Image (cartoon, rainbow, N blue to C red):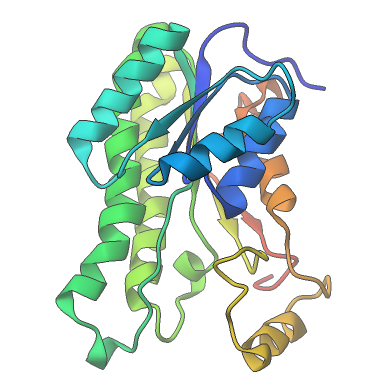
Length: 247
């Protein structure tokens, strides 16, 4: 097991389900102190209660599209743990629809949560990490941010924006020993993908050389690596986790 920081915590957004929950479980098992963020307070408590005995965890209900609440969460985590070692910007939403039928509100929602939320949290932790001269930021993007997808112009734009934001933050904070990387999952089996029509699932599976859908733990392992000492010289990168789908 890689050595974990002796102080500070890792903030994980969107931690109440899916990939975020898998990341929380993986990091707790590795010994990281955690601050779990999501809008649903009850589901956050359920995730925290299911973590291994002895896990150090706090729950922070929040809408990450609200910059004031985001800053309050970071302040709470700083007060509780004394430092913020890592940030995993995972929370995300979709509002799919064809471009010609997409309302302005449907366009804005994924951008407000996926991209703006990532910005709000990154901006809030950056001064802390710069002062302590260490830190890790991991942003969860998507292969859709690299390839685009019909019916997901808003989601694709938000995830592509996260990749560009990642590269810029890496350049700005690198001089203070703060790394910033992105992870771009492909088709990961979560409750968000469970309701897709069978034909869509079959078509997606046919495009994956590894012939299986990804699991949350496949993404969580990559996130854990990027938070670890072994990734100290990796920054500004996008690691694709898609079973070879867009290789």
